[in-house]
Length: 430
Image 1 (cartoon, rainbow, N blue to C red):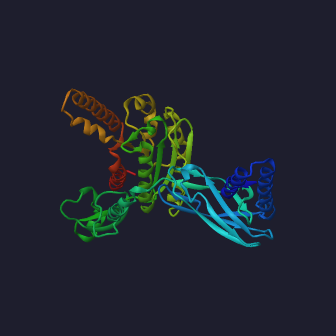
Image 2 (spheres, helix red, strand yellow; image 1 turned 60 degrees about the horizontal axis):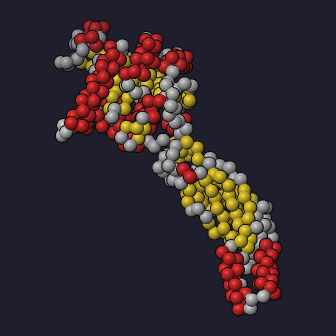
């Protein structure tokens, strides 16, 4: 049973005769009239337990984008249902409106739409649907709750998508689909043409030269059908915020851009997320489904406040990836975690794969370097210079061990990773 605001108003009005004719009989009459009105409404209100409720609509959406979920309400009872419905979701789903008026004739159905604007990645689920059916007097009504399960998976936002057209143009140039041709790189034979100044002499085809009696060179197209393995470090260092976003979120965005580019290039893209355990994995996704599968797997990833097990990470990559591949490791360039974790086991990875380590740099360091106004700013600048020097030393160590390194601030991180992939592809190193 549920009482409405009208019941409170009637009770307040009932105070008037009690004040004018103060007696027990007056109080009893007022109370009986109020109870009679409540009883009539409860008797005539349409039942809510027999309602049939079903959901349909969006099952996934990018973070920050709206999604609509419909609730189909059917009234099988012989009475008209008038009242209000509340479709409750978890707060991070951003559901609106909070309540909706319901006027449902007997035997009919209505579709009520809830718009979601999620504020967090992961699975957003509804709580309960509460329906209040009010009687004809509007004093009281019946109320009941229904479990109507649903799930909307909120995927990471692909904000770096705007960089994709330019990189695809460069990819087409590398692949020989535009006028420019790649000379002397790649491993897949493309065509023969006359030698011009600047060509690599190693690309001369001596047999064709002898036949034509002119110097002829081979042209190559960048490799296709290679394998790119995106490895996300979801350990402690991925929780640090750089600018307005956690490192992990910047890595997810860069991974999506690289996956879109690599899949268009005809390369196979796999995903692995690891800290102390393997959190997510995507293998064998086709070109048309790779982005959706990666975004779906990334949706529930959150930083774990533990040190990443580098041995497990490398072991998982080696176990899952038999052929030589480009392994793109999204992690931090902090010296201590790398020295104690990744560097001791790095050799087994670089001996079998091409490794690219991508780390999000902090633009605040450059801002601190410029500070010289007072003693506090001077100390900040000294600390920033020390941090930058340590980062350069770590990068140098990694490069000496055969690892390509991308170190860029959040706003240019995703395109920098994509550019590094294109450079490796042009050099025939995939």
